[in-house]
Image (cartoon, rainbow, N blue to C red; front, top):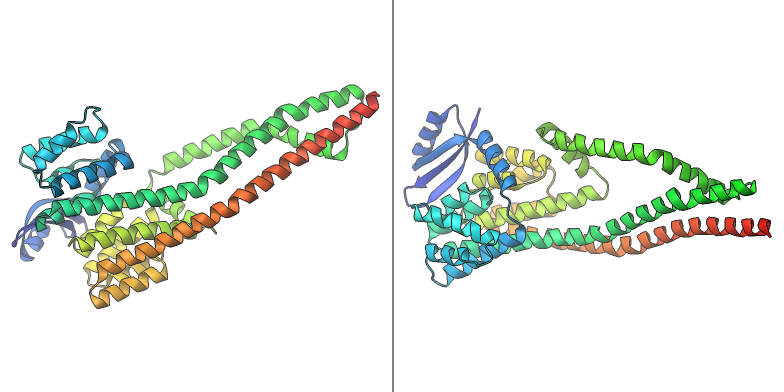
Length: 402
């Protein structure tokens, strides 16, 4: 059965949006009307999702700019400034930053009579959860609080990203230095000793013979290896357009020994944090799960959240639906189950997110503490072994010459 995305008005006021399953648009309209809402927009879910994703890739705003824009708008609205005036103040930035251009675009939409949430939903720089949380804030008459919550969410996501980057930057930099150093030694320095030894017609020591053999492999295989790497990268870029390939690649990454568990924690932290804030904002669980699915970058989690959304629509508990995905840690699932039983789902989702965040930060710290000395020791041993072989050969050549 096809899925349709909808936007509708409640009888008590306020706008809602989400997805439902129906044979056609007429049946979707009848379903919404029977639920006591007035549909204002219905479209096939798949096609619109693809179009929005392409647009967001073209107009993506840097995370820092988005945080600043959200914080500025929240502060102005919280101080009692009218929406159009607040957007005009942000758009008046002399530097014409991207957030100033964004504010000018939103101001035009607001001046045409659109709501802020509608303008955000139609702009490709904003995710669906962003627009939905602003819509929920507008329905309560407190858009400033919703924007403040969004600013906290965006800053939190940046912090998690920085923690992971810090865990990887040092080992990656050491690896790059090691590769460049070894390539220079094996590709340019060691072959000069082969010429020198041939001129003396003397068989080199065992260490130098091994080094010359490795140098020959590097010289002969570097270009084919580079071409294979480029071809593999191009193959992955092209095949990533296929959802089945993305799903298989995501599952392979999640199955890796050390990286897989960390990726699951990161995705689960983002999921519980986003769901917690959306539920706290008054967004229905099926719509929140659908929005979380669109915001996820992991295809395996996206597929799982789609199945979880259908299960919640059938009346299943969200804890059981998330457990069926197989990606969310058991501790977080237990907190979700307790939240459903006690009626405090949003706070306990955020609590699960906090626990996962602390685990991610602790894992990142451990990786940095372990990778730093090990990488330096490995690099020192390799370069030291090469230097020792070269130095021994130089001494032997000196003895022969003298």
